[in-house]
Image (tube, rainbow, N blue to C red):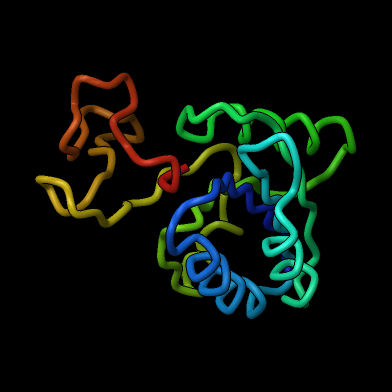
Length: 157
């Protein structure tokens, strides 16, 4: 079975959100030994999201913090604190709710020893975001927003 994969997914109320979460749930339920931490950008959990999680068959935690409207940073931080405070062991992966996931990704995630970057397909100018590695070191980025310190989508970590 391997190492537990701990998925952290920030979410907020918007059109298609429930459809995105259903799509994620259909994929994630096929992954063994997975914990899905979903964090709402709100003062309270949304009953519709709670229902999706409870009927998904996926081991999950549903938290909320906000509202912040700040790209999911506070939500990821709360989830990471939850992992630390509950001494959870596994490999943390930031899984945005509006992305598509292939099951093969989770096999790759389980191979992580310290930290991993994964290429992320997107609709930006490059079509993909990823680090360029030479001799085990990041030497450049193939990304549309190179002015950022780490110009990759959070789903690349």
